[in-house]
Length: 259
Image (cartoon, rainbow, N blue to C red; front, side, top):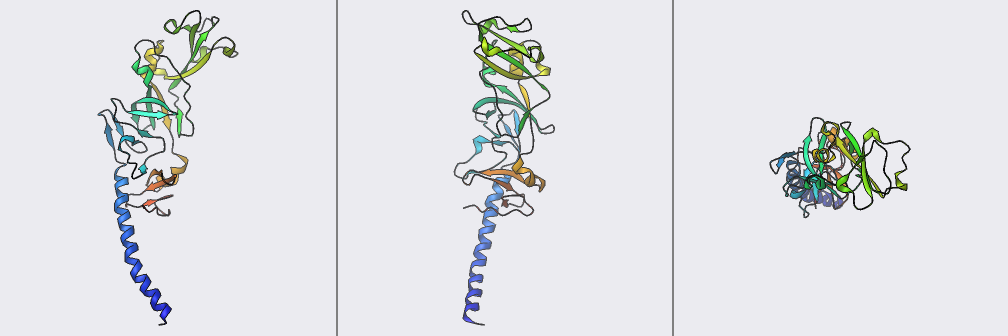
């Protein structure tokens, strides 16, 4: 055997055990992340399971976490909290059979008889959508003229000479040019089952969002993995039950090695 072949054989014999040790160590460490995807009860009220994860258990020193981006729930408060578009909601319930969750606007829950809707919720790029169980309440604030007879006057939100109103779903006129007479419009989802004509009670009952499989997580979940994310690389990960972490899926995905 020539000297170059001898050197190559020696190099392989030296590096192979080191590489094997590194892979096995990474698997042991990574298996912790898969285990962290297991269920837990948030404040004794809501079961937090994949694709949701506990934001209060997140360790910035190990920036990988298991679950969908944006699905982190904070359990360190009195109620489980989920932030969407920088707005805060209490998580009332998560139904893992119907892929739905019930949320309550924090302002509505903290208000007694007359909660005010402050914003129009946008779901952005999250894999969430409004449920068929929902209906909309359309609020119009500080209007200089009276609205149609189908509008409900909000006595408790009417300052000075201007008045505020709301329409329940289909009662609003199609050609209503509200921006000519009102300062702001806010659309609030509530559940149809929780609507009894009292907007405050309906808002405190909350509304339902359905979730779907995140686009970047489909292959991972199809391979029995749990999708996650790595903040340091800004990439989706696939946590596998054998302790490995892949970039794509557990069957043929490229391994992700912790550093």
